[in-house]
Length: 306
Image 1 (tube, rainbow, N blue to C red):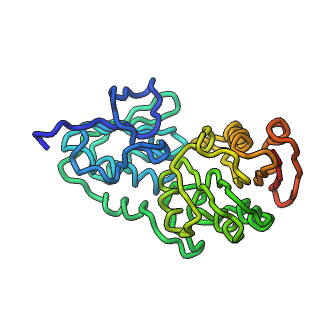
Image 2: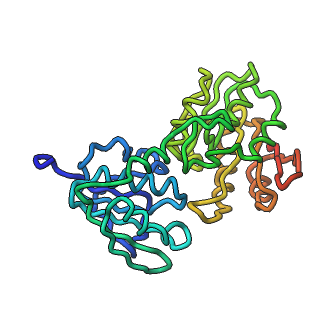
Image 3: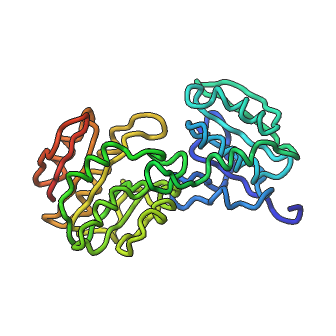
């Protein structure tokens, strides 16, 4: 790589007061639509990577192993995480990869800085443990780090059991692995279904899980408006309410507002939500009519008409 200009990378959104991200650094997180695929980077192609490390153990070790593999020998890797969301374990995990770690603590975070050693150990095991796989228990392709990656979310199961037979053109916002899409596409009157998710790993898995030609997948933020997706007949969703590892009620509320914008007059949105989430007011403001279809087992299901 001596005749090639090395790259700098950033994974996620490391707090700027904890680490400097080089200007022009490539975004590498699968949760940022359009980001570069860290796993596809040629070994030794990066001069530095700064990472806000994921909270899940398998996902975090996988991402750090990918980063170390992509770095040139001697290049700097900075991993940051809240102490209670993986930060306390990062030093040991990096040492398992044969890294010499300089660790500091600041603002309830741990910062680990290493220079990529010439020889890495344990990365193959970490890459294998965090890789996409077929989950026998669910019958779906998945990957650690994707929402509900190794089980079907009970809210989604409940929503599928309550859905009507849709027709026309619709969307699954925050489609995940494609479980809701299977329920929607049971209706032969559905002409086209847009599956939208912010997680590239979920989209890649859904491509393998939903083989119906009526399904069209989009790596995109489901809270953002898309002028190409409007006047839809229906929307289904199990909106997320976490940003990273923290609860964020505004995220689901943004899903609801975007669903209303995407529907034609008279179009319908079906959604499931945990009972404690305050969605009633935003539903009432965004839609002409709202009906509580089901309220049991800690979940609420709504039918909202535009």
